[in-house]
Length: 434
Image 1 (cartoon, rainbow, N blue to C red):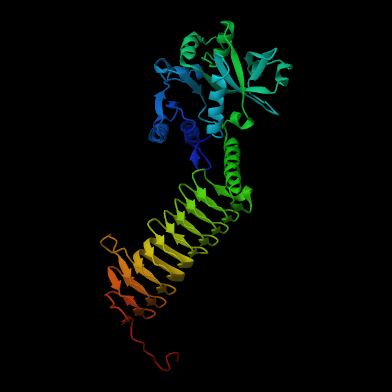
Image 2 (image 1 turned 60 degrees about the vertical axis):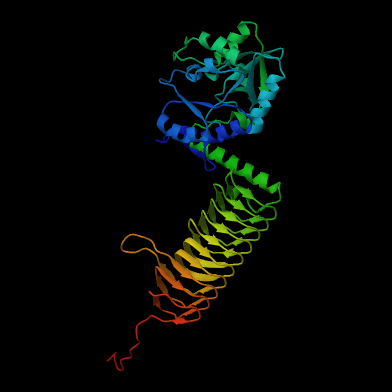
């Protein structure tokens, strides 16, 4: 990968690829997931263990069979599936299918294979009368064997007893002096056992070993998510240029414009519009919300029929109430913005509560961060009219139906229905230019 980040932590469609595999394992109903870690073990553990993976460290990289030995296979019972941490396109349906086919096959080992147009460096599956006889690595294959398009995906399904019978017998009699898991197949066949080929789709074989392959996997994952949403009634204008992570939910009849990135636990309701170049992270949009171009949200909630943007920035803790309007170049942080309230443009509201139907004029600022490095709250009531270029030095409160004169710096509470004015007196000096 030519990167200081451990390979399996590289993100595919926003999710570290090892988590993609673990999530598929859990969805498939596997009772336990053991993860063998080596290089970058401390970092990998910090990601894997909170997700329910049990980590086992391979002290030296002595091959794939040695990696499996590191996972204490002697304590396993029942059926075991051995997967790769760098195959992020594997789905729970794939895993369930492999397990089901193995259990119905009466085989000792199920080897997952795939047929590729260009097999490249994959080990070839050699069959005799339909039965698997060997796996031949590409480096060791003859010209005739290299013509075989069925390849080993390095996914194995077998019973724990079979694994523990043959794993100790694997030797390192090869040029690299490594213990290869592929030797399970030859040992089983030599012992009169039966190895079945379980056919997988092409994506099952897709492993990530370079940044180019990482980008390829990410592209497939995003397109897969777009297809899933479109099949459920979401309009995506350009799936090739839309980036929606697997954890995101989008309701039917919603329209997604190009270059939109929906991340994390974002939930978009029905009949919403998300225009181009928006980035929504861990945000909730209720039904009929319109998010205009270039808007950025992070951990916010936008209630139904609200309009946000273009070029708005909504930061964590912000909640936009029904039918509110947040316009261009408005930033909010930790703010409750009332039903039907309006902030048309060029405004910062931080640590604030804004009442229903209140109008926030252009250039309004809540001065929430004080010299003592603490943050203070601004409360503006219902039906308030805030003139342009006003500042509120928190903590401060404005009562319902009050009016704030343009250009005011409000440092004291303003009663309901009052006019608050706090600005310097104007002086005109005649003949000043002379």
